[in-house]
Image 1 (cartoon, rainbow, N blue to C red):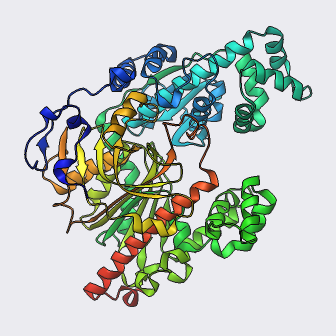
Image 2 (image 1 turned 180 degrees about the horizontal axis):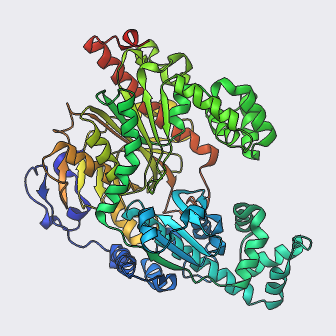
Image 3 (image 1 turned 45 degrees about the horizontal axis):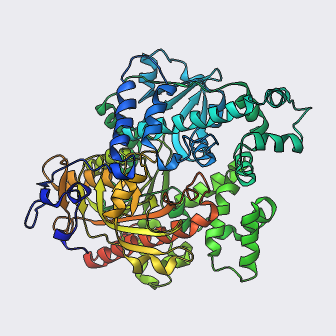
Length: 624
């Protein structure tokens, strides 16, 4: 752990003369000078200008044109949209945005945002029950489409605006670039617009379109792959029209975010009471809704033959190749990771209702309960009763180094696992969980992040977090280290003693901005840790979380609960090609995801088992 006086927050690092002398106490004020870097081009000032621009414009009672935000977007010079000002389309940014917007966005004209159904109804949108529920592959958010050009989105926190607005702006900029390029060749644009199901575009014509769009063959192949069967229809729409999206925020308030989060948590709180879990020890995990269940339930592992056949018959080429290498003993990867990855697609088929019912029954039999979200907070919840788990069904990596020590059946504890939220929603979620129990034994945060010093697939373990929302810098003893992750990583590296910065949005960083943080050794760029830590602060102290302070958790967390923060690298923003717009984690993200999951569960089960032994509890015997 770094010495307390040698670790500077970004606010302090700008001017050593503004640092406070001596050993700062938790809560000591920290000066907050500006830290944009003019000599490196656009920096934080330009990003802040962009945020203020769309925040103030959305206060209007009417719709605003997305084009009015384009100048601020271009000035901010986002690293994820490095080609924004170029004539050629920036396919990385366009695909990144496409994967975070519903496919119907190609037909949309107007986008409306609200915190709740009442918010939509008050603005005159009373028939949303009849709209189609749509989704985006790369971002969990509740969307509804009226099939007449209007798309509605529920907003769960201010971070949804910081995420959604730049995504839409980037999408429109790149769409209109491609429109201009196609429109410049009128015969080609006419041909693209005239194609029908009986008169499809020929390979030669598609190649001509590629050249007109100034796209490299690899980029063109990626674009067609993302669009799939709708590729030619989408090209026709691009050729026909430029995008002029409008955006409107239908009211809302700060308390509104807390209100909708309370409504989201209410079913989980009822279930905890109905099952008699309300006073039990709680281990809170923010991760996903697949890896923990897979590791604990054995559902996928017992279907090895079925899932192997599924991969052979329906798997992507990379998955079939990996299966062949595993069967030949030529791959270092885990068989279980392949099964877990295949299970998601296998159970998702339209004719798989009975298989999904069986899976649910198997999970309930070992104490795993699922709660699907219904409102604006699109975050699934799982409640796991440790006493009902069957160690014989565990992923072998969970117990292979500990044997019977990780047997949770004598524990009365429960795990509450949530599908990791976006940004500030984490604060409201952690607050609701903390308000519902005073038996919190551990908080474990697992999420994706950009890395400034590693590679995609590496795992970063931070013990310092600077939160841009509050300006607070948190120091804490991360309960995880290199030794906890390294044995379970095959391809990535485990990097501990890192420093993380919680940013406001994926599009809200530029090169000067990242340079500043990297110079101060902040190497992990993520969105949830800061809000979680702000909520934890309010569970430890008698006041609301402060603003712009240096906070030392070392002397406060021990004896209260365990704290662990793990991120796996999904982006390397210093390398323009290495973003999730350029490539996805796909199957190869399983290595870091499951190594992290195994580490978290080993920590939880070890502590729960030790606590049961220390207290002399025989919960498993009392409740067979």
